[in-house]
Image (cartoon, rainbow, N blue to C red):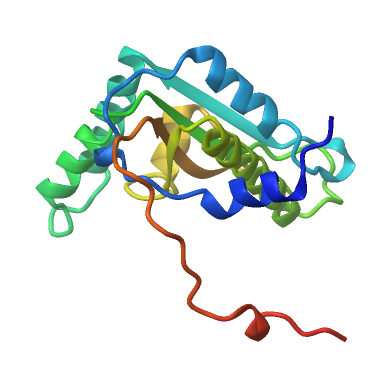
Length: 194
């Protein structure tokens, strides 16, 4: 049975970002998160390097991650730039989410493939996961704040220097209806038919 264009179009058009604070604390079955990771695994990949990797935090591990993230911010932020509100935001970001997934690109062993292509492939894997979440009625947030892109996060996750964190995904359920989508720049201004 083939999925119709209108079904997949509907999922793509209705995917929305839901901030973690708008999630309701209801737990997603781990089996559903595993299904989302299976979708992620079908992203395009040059040379079959399959560079996407995910660290999944569920249950009590969500709070452990948020605590560690907040502490990284405290430890690695200059005193004059440190904001207690930012620390608190990182600390409590997981309070109403079900799962936190750190998505990163693990650099493959084919140096002829540019790192940019490995990052793009991993981004496609993340999009697959987010679209699958939308199809299952799961709210998602692709976060890049806090320490996500800083070297201490790589140390926390035990990544290599050449690996790249692409975001922290917060998954949960929300009672708040998704907003209506919009695009600011008309498609005609983004496309040139040659």
